[in-house]
Amino acid sequence: MKPYIETASAAGLEWVKSSYSGNNGNCVEVAALPAGARALRDSKKPHGPALVFGAEQWGAFLAGVEAGGFNLA
Image (cartoon, rainbow, N blue to C red):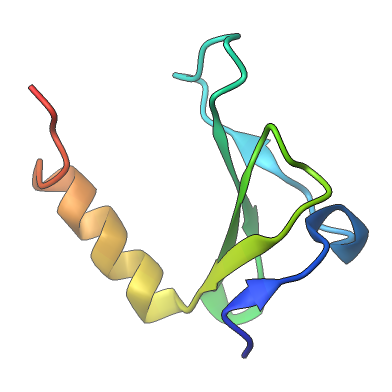
């Protein structure tokens, strides 16, 4: 699996933005890929590239979020 998608909007994916995102345009969107992988893109650049994470990488990221590893406070 490539670590990126060159043209995210042309990939035919359903992109989802967090319900916690405001209307300031600074959002990250995620799309489900086969085998539990995920793609991430910048909502300000929907036609630009997207990063791709395998299921194991995505799971490790979520575990870090749930453990508070990314809290800025």
